[in-house]
Amino acid sequence: MCGSLKEELTNRLPWLFDDLGFRIGEHNYSYKQMGSWFAVLESSSFRVKFVNERGSIGVEVASLSEPERWMELGFLWLSLTGDRPNPQLEGWAWFLRDHVAQIAEALGPNFEKIRAAFDQREREGKESAERYISSNGGTPDELVLRHF
Image 1 (cartoon, rainbow, N blue to C red):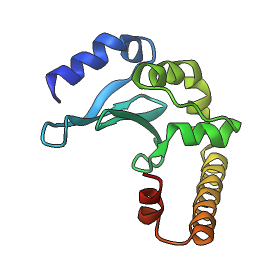
Image 2 (cartoon, rainbow, N blue to C red):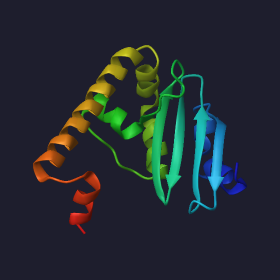
Image 3 (cartoon, helix red, strand yellow):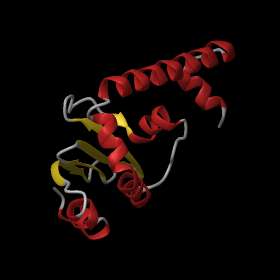
Image 4 (cartoon, helix red, strand yellow):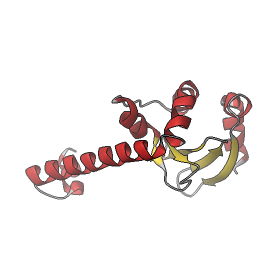
């Protein structure tokens, strides 16, 4: 891991490790990709992946029963509550801290039910995007370019 990333996580968010018991697993830093990085934190309940792509922070979570099936945390929370948060690094980490028990429950004992709800929201989002694209004509890339 890039020393500065490890220092950033441990200095800015020490409670992730000290209080919640996470440890750093996989990690990568790419200077060539505009300083993009990711770090996977693992606990006894679930996995969390922090991703920084071109300055935008994303957080994904995975159940220990399907450790490579990542779910975007905001979208998972939307599936659980109907509300979607959109914070940056510290905000995501604090959100995680405030809701660690609910997320562990969702990714543990209730995983099958939550996976079904997550998959349903994902299908609905894709269907909505497809309806929008077909009603406005063109490809997704063309539609984005029209707005600039």
